[in-house]
Picture 1: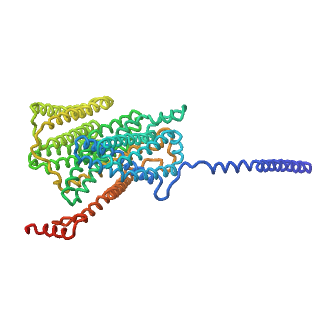
Picture 2: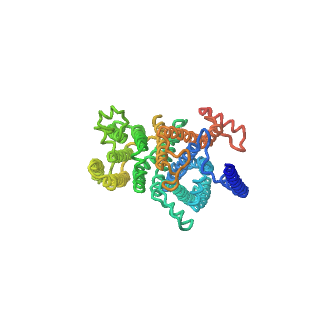
Picture 3: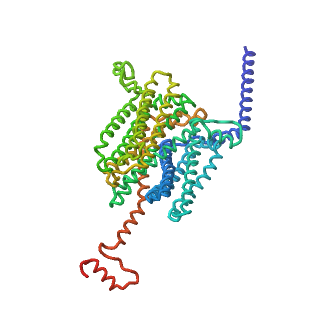
Length: 626
C-alpha cells in the first residue's frame, strides 16, 4: 500500500513537472511572439476605412441632397448655352436684335449659376471621399485617366465662358461677332464632353464593364463605354434642354409678373414664349430617349429592369406619369393662352380645337396613371378576383401606356403647330393639297399608334417591345418631320391677318411657367432616385457590394420627402440666382430714372450759358408763349 502511494505521488509530481514545462514554453513563446501580436494589432487598427457616417443626418442623406442639387444645377448650366447660342445665331442671321438681347440674358443666368454649380461639385467630391473612401479608391483606380481629361475640359470651358460673356459687347459687329459665335459653339462642345465624362462614372455603377488586363487607358475606356453610357448621354442632354428652357421660362414669368413698364412686359412675355417653346421642343423627344434607356437596361440585366418597372420602384412610374401629364397640360395651356390673348379675335375660332385637345390629353393622362396592380385590402381583392381591376386592369400594362404617351406627344405637337399658324392666311396655290396631306398624315398616324397599342395585347412581349413600341415612336417622329417643314413652307408665303400682340397675357400665364419648371425639377429628382435605387445593395452592380448600414433602397415615402426637399432647396437656389442676376438691371433702371430730365425740361448743354438754359426751360414749360 505504501509503495502504491509513493508511486502515485511520484506520478503526480511528473505530471505537475510536465505542466510547468509546457506553461514555461508557452510563456517563452508568448514573450517572443509579443512584438508580432502588437504589430498585428497595429495593422488591424491601421486598416483602411470603408465608410464614415454623419450622426443625425446620415452620410447617404447628405450625399443625396448635395449630389441632386449639383446635378440639377449642372443640367441648367449645360442646357442654357445650347439655346442661348442658337438665339444668338438667329439674331445674327436675321438682324433682329431681340434675339441677341435674349441670348445675352440667357447667358447672364448661366454666369450667375456657373460658380454655384462648381461649388456644389467640389462639396460633393469631398463628401464622397470622406464618407465612401473604399468606393472612391476603386473608381479612381479605374477612371483616373478620365479624371485628368475632365480637369482639362473644365479649365477650357471656364476660359471660354469668360471670353463669351465678357466679350459680348466688344465682339458685337463684323468679324468680332463671327468669332463670338464660334466661342459659343466651342462652349457647347466643351459642355457636351463635360457632361458625358462624368456620365461614364455613374453609368459604370449600374452597368459595369471590367477588364483585368490592359493599360490604365484601356481599362478606363472599357469602363466608360458601358451599355447604358450613350442612352444616358442622349437622355440627359435632352433633359438638360428641357430643364434649362422651363427654368428660363419661369424666370421670364416672374419678371413678367413684376414688370413695371410696357417694354418690360413686352420683352418678358416674348421671353416666356421662347422658354416654353424650348421646353416643349425638348419634351417631345424625351419619352423616346427614356424608352431607349430602359430598353438598354433590360438588355443588360433583366433583374434590374424588373426591379425598376415591375418591383417596388414601379410605383415611381405612376408618379412620373402624373408629373409628365401636368407638364404636358401646363405647356399646352400656355400655348392656348397665347392664342387667345396674343391674337385678337381668335378665341372663338380656336375654342373647339382647344377643348378637343384638352379632353384627349386628360383621357391619355388617366390611362397613363392607371397602375397595373392596385393597392387593395383582402376583401377588395376578393371582390375584384385579384389585384388587377376587371375593367381598368388593361390600362395598367406598357402597351396602353406607350400608346397614350405617343398620343400626348402628337397632341402637344399639333398644339404648337396651331399656335404657329394662328393669325396667318395661306396664299400658296398648293396650300389646300398640303393641308389635306398633313391632315391625312396626322389622322393615319394616330390610328396606327392606337392599332399597334391594341395589337400589342395579343403578341409576345419581345415582339411588342422590339417592333411595336419602336414602330409607334417612328410613326410619331415621321409626323413631326413631315408636318414641320410643310408648315414652314406654307407660312413663308402666308399673309398675316392679325398681328401678334405681346405683353397682354394674364397673370396665370406667368404662374403656369413657374409650375412647369417645378414639375421638371420634381421629375428629375424622381428619376434620379429610380436609377440609383435600381442597383439595390450594390455600389457597382454585381462587382462591389454595399456593406454599409445603408445597404438598402429607401422606402418610397421617405424618398418622396427627400425629393420634395431637394426640389425646394433647388428652387431657393434658383431664386437666389435670379435675384443676383437682376440686381444690376434694377440698379441701372434706378440710375436711369434718377438721371432722366423732368418732363417738359431740356437738359442743359455743357458749356452753355445758364441764362439761356433757363430761358429754354421756360419756353418748354410754356410752349404757347413766344
